[in-house]
Image (cartoon, rainbow, N blue to C red; front, side, top):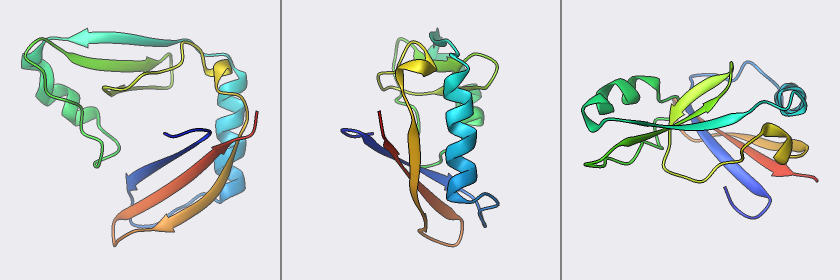
Length: 115
């Protein structure tokens, strides 16, 4: 994630959604004002956290003290070491700028904030 823009790489052989479908789906979820919570798992649960990873290029940081988990209530829970919003409404509206094929199994989705 950068200033007003971000990208996600997914382990997918083919995309089944268009840019508009991705943006519409994400904007609907954002508008639901879903709380985002941080949880800390003990380090011996690192392998459990890895099973949840959907973005194989963004593995969670390994720590002697904990594995940081981010939960978007009722939507997803992922290990992540970054900073996050407290509620999806803080994101504002987005557009999906492009979907790139970066390899046989890698699809990159580029998003831009418009608010």
